[in-house]
Amino acid sequence: MNNEFHRIGLRLDSIPFETDFGIHQVTLRTAVSQRDFKNENTDTYLFSTSTASSTYAIQHPIRTRAFYIAAQDQIQWNEMFSGTAGLRYDQEQLAPQELNAKCYNCDTRGKATTFKNLTGSLGLNAQVTPVWNLGYYVSTGYRVPSASEMFFSYKHLSGNWLANPYLKAERSVNNSISIRGENRLGRLNLSLYHIRYKDFLFEQETNGLTSNGM
Image 1 (tube, rainbow, N blue to C red):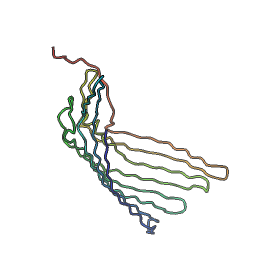
Image 2: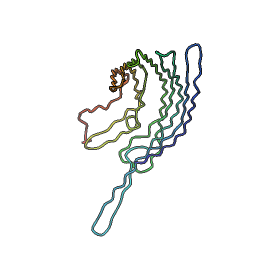
Image 3: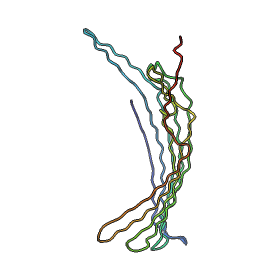
Image 4: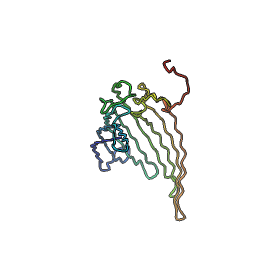
């Protein structure tokens, strides 16, 4: 397998500035990237007087192009309360390419698919005493299906691998509560997490009978 990855990113951080709603520090980030994935296999056969080799692929090459832009604000309201707020937009395209080698069991090349996702986060911290800090954080997330999950179909006598080109991006809502304490005796950090998924991505194995053509 061959992977080639290119990425360029930019990050800007403001100096802290004060408003009627607290002291803020804003961070802006953006990046574009491209990943080219190719599968190429070479089998070499050794004979008593000669050798032979065969080069082949088991799936179409995939080109993935991605872009994101994100903003985050770190806020200090007073000596007790602080927080964060963030927003991020992602766009990702997975596009099958022409075969780079012979493929005996490949399906026809699939169509390019584009995913667009908007996610956000909010956090609140309370320094209730010089020792104890309470925190709550909520965020949304996503996972784009991999190229193999969407486009890799392979038929073999021992079993078939079937792709699903109609998959949606997996989405999640994440909640966490934390309690932190620190003094001269040491540190304590306790966190509780809860995650709810939508359109959860998973592999499914099935057993069945197919005709052998006889």
